[in-house]
Length: 268
Image 1 (cartoon, rainbow, N blue to C red):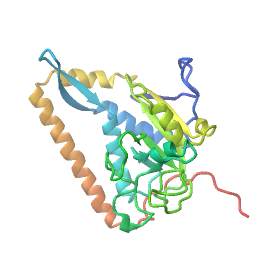
Image 2: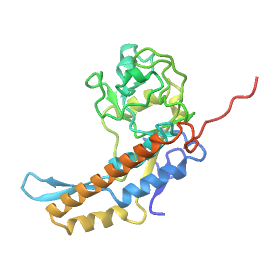
Image 3: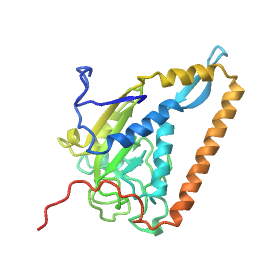
Image 4: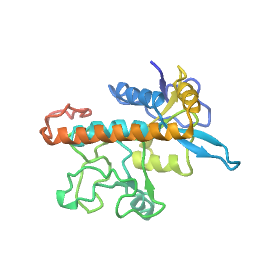
């Protein structure tokens, strides 16, 4: 395999200033491993112009992983165990002094009811500037339930059951926490004292040098060639997404591959 994933709780090379979080839920590591490996081998490469006028490149891994998960979500009509980059409204948590959970944004099609999918817009309607967060992945308890949060209500006040099993933050080589990011993700993951077992932070090691191979290959190309290749990759990705969406229209919402439904409650 090209990448090594280590959860913070079991990593033996963790810096002492790192917090301890939960391991991934059973049977979920392989799926994320596949998406991460793909993003290491085929990152989106963009041209960056430096202040001195010279050109360099930036390799975008996260956007590739997110796009790969979104294809699976669309195929499953968003009844999928893994939900990539769900946008959360942090304002309810701030306004209640931490008592209310952050609330995920659902699609703007309010007429489709509280069971509609989460918004895939990076700037969903109704956001309060400065109070939006998008964790890398939310793993849900019940795949058939599209709700990706732990809040008992959505932004329209409709009731929901806590369906958030695990918040997953993926740190690719060179990644670090942004300002306020870790604290916000803890609040999304769980109430105070709960987030330690409802949040997973993954360190990714590029063991076979896939990123370096991609970098060397890209630097051997002209900026124009890199831009043309990026446009082609994005067109192909968009085409795959459209095909997935078209196929999902002809499938029963509950006839897709079953997702992880979490621990079952004992019969009463």
